[in-house]
Image (cartoon, rainbow, N blue to C red; front, top):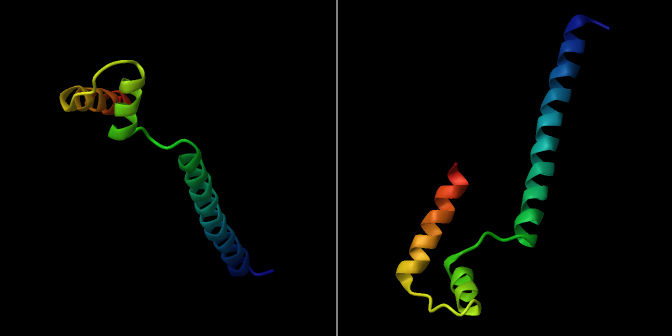
Length: 73
């Protein structure tokens, strides 16, 4: 086998592996987000109502900013 064909096979295998890994990771993340959606303002409002608190927009904004700040750490 000539050296150029070995290099070509290696490069093609690398490209195929990267593409396959990308699609597998994408599928995994889509399934994960479908099963565990991120918390939005509406969900936060419902949680506060269930805890017996009156959800004002100011409280919701404070909690959302605190959660976003915690995620970026």
